[in-house]
Image 1: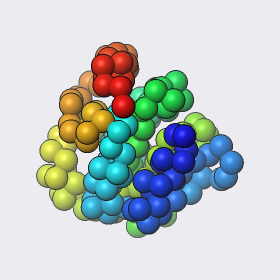
Image 2: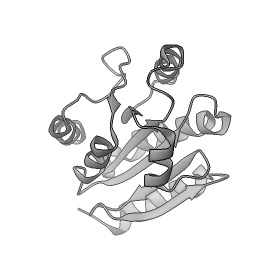
Image 3: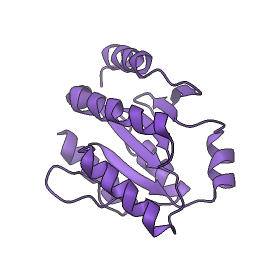
Image 4: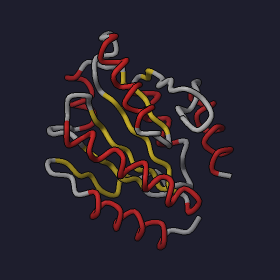
Length: 167
C-alpha cells in the first residue's frame, strides 16, 4: 500500500521515486513547486522532510535516523522526504550526494533541489541546517526543527502524530 500510494503521488509530480531497494541510486532534481507537490500529494500520510547539504556533518549524521524512521513507521503512514540543497550544477558534489545515498541505503523519497540558496532559504525560512519539518495527514505544518536537531525528539513527535491521527 505504501509503495503504491507513493508511486501515485510521485507520478503526479512527474518524476520517479529514489528507492535503493531494487535500483541503483538516481536522485531526481526538482524545483520548489515540485517539492511542494510532493508534500501536498501525500495527504493522508504524516510527512517528515529533512533539508541537508553534502558538507554538513550533522546533516549526514541525522539522515540515517530519518531513513530508520521511514522503515519503522511506513506501514503506520509515515512518508519521508530528504532534500539535498547543494548546487545541482556541481557534478562532483552531485556524485558524492548520490554515492552517500547509495552507501546509506537511503529509503523514502530523496531529491535534490534546483533553486538558488537565497530562494529556498527564504521560501522555507531556513537559517540553519539540518532543518526538519513535520506535516500532519492534512498537509499542515506541525513542527519545524533546526539548529541542533534532536532526532530522538522528532521520532517521539512522529510516533505521537501517527498514533493520534489515524487515517
